[in-house]
Length: 56
Image (cartoon, rainbow, N blue to C red; front, side, top):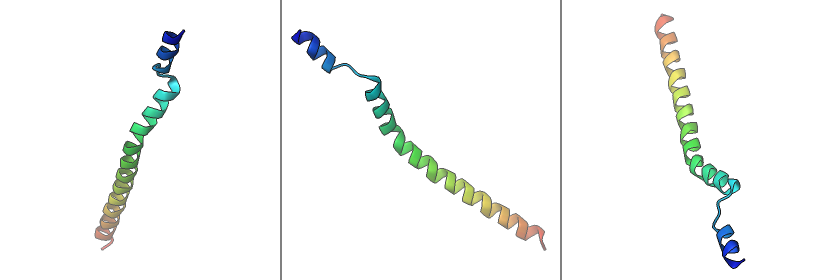
């Protein structure tokens, strides 16, 4: 019984894997959020410049 109890302590559950996955994805999610804002801002500025150039 002791061997089985020790073996069960070392098992990885779906919950353990889900937590580990979330922890590893959090930095990537933050980087993607910054990248999304940077691309959006860059696109808006490019459109603003194009509008300014073609309005004259």
